[in-house]
Image 1: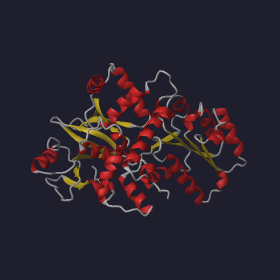
Image 2 (image 1 turned 90 degrees about the vertical axis):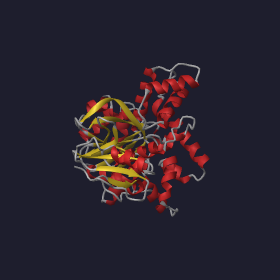
Image 3 (image 1 turned 30 degrees about the vertical axis):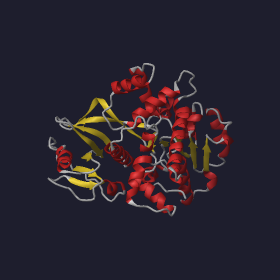
Image 4 (image 1 turned 30 degrees about the horizontal axis):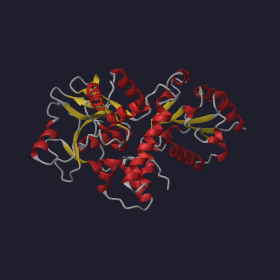
Length: 406
């Protein structure tokens, strides 16, 4: 059964009838098309006639004849027969050349509300941003969160327990993978999905693009997500395991391609003392932890980094702006900011002994800022102390705990 993804619907609903183009982006197979179907269902239930819904999926061969903005313009105009409002849904629109010209024309001349999806952030670059400056609003869709995994299991009458957090940590939240039972099938699916993303959203039919090199380097970056990023470490690893040299520029080019395909998010450091973002030495987090273990030869199996990645994705799905906190003595995992207010978060696997407890809670000692501070771990015992709140990670992911901000 189809999961109703309330986290994203709550963000998009206020804009259903607003004169902005709703741009829904995210990594391939995260569930953008299903989300569009849900939005269409809701609009029809609100009283809009289904014949005033125009839906085109450009990965469906039925619409192969729509190759450019003129084709798209003609197709849409042919379906509009009166002056009432139409709702236009264009799925994976990046396949249409210069589509932005058609969108600009629709918005200027028709009584419409427009929704588009895409799997590459170039959707909002170039002429689209020029033609439609201030006339778009973007929503990024991620694979299932842990809460959505629980909801999907319950929707489909499957057994759920909090222990599934370990399954989620290993295989992530791409929706289709939950229909696969054997680990070898899940790995095969994720590997095939990754190849598909490279070929359709990154390679762009370039004969000079080295697909194997990109996959080797990008999977190394994903496997080590959450660690301090080092170009030199990647070069040293690759040169030690291959018979060719790898340049710094190649790595930076690949990072940019990964970001545009929504495979990774770049996270800046935040100077807690100076209260400002810092440049350089970013960290990168994977859009889904399942991609981290495709190539087991490069995986950093530190569970803490997997949990950090999951917490980061949860925070951005809730609309937080997230930074790495920099103090004069070290770092705090996250500074989470929303509506000008913030909190500080430290993530740990288990607070197994007093040394670990002192290290995790002690990370906040250099911070004079009175904003709320949290240590998150999988422990079920409450270790809160000195005004710092300890939170169970599963409880946080299941929305049983709300972060306080100031």
